[in-house]
Length: 308
Image 1 (cartoon, rainbow, N blue to C red):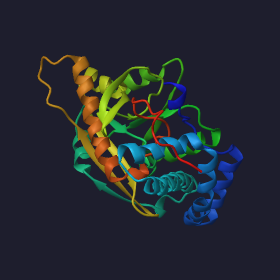
Image 2 (spheres, helix red, strand yellow):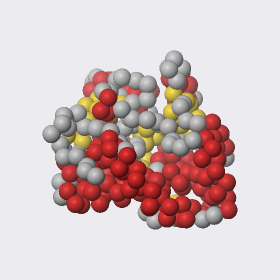
Image 3 (cartoon, rainbow, N blue to C red):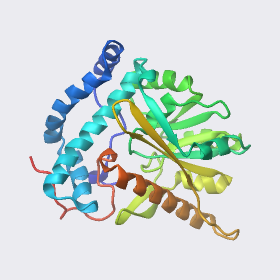
Image 4 (spheres, rainbow, N blue to C red):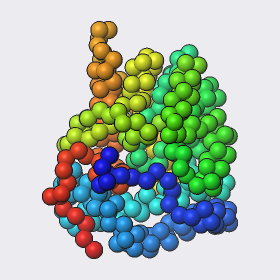
């Protein structure tokens, strides 16, 4: 990934500030944080030009918005991102019951958890995928969540506590690739592995997929694992609908694969099927698309840029 497409996998803010947020939300309504965030976002947009340019170009180039509409949506996008981050800290502060969840397609999840085989949950940086692990619970199979290992100790500690109560344990992505052994072990035991499937986490293997009018690289890992272990994939997208409500969309990622299809081709087709599901959700909720780098392979040097 070149310099213009780099991203940071850690939550912003100092450990002290993160601890202060948790203490604050134990006493106050998270919606007060939203009000502050609404005022902070314009300053962030001014000083974080690369992220603003990436999402602005998404609205202009991929969705065809006018310059004015794209600018407004860039603000809304950053505000929505701030909200989902604050929601995470509200859960850390013990406000889990503040949020309501509606699940669309839960029958697919129930069907797979009732079986003997493991399966893969494919997430993406649209909406608030992580909070799904904090708010929902099930008793049939353990879930092993692949997570970025570079978070602050404050976030890591609270993640562990929030996940543990929901039968979710974390598999940190490490430079020595030891997380791959944990993933293989979980799937062999018939358990669930959850991972983001729109960003590379330690692997250079990608599949170029058609995505919203262009070509984009998707990590091959989840789809290669599904092919190797012959397990199903569920795409799960968690969309914020209001200050208190999230809607969870559960969608099977399926293809018609003949018995003699090569593993490489099956991996590519599964990746494309996931990209199609993701494109549908992003088109419906574009202001909750939180990939702040040049996601598409097409050169963007001539694309419009956000102006102060």
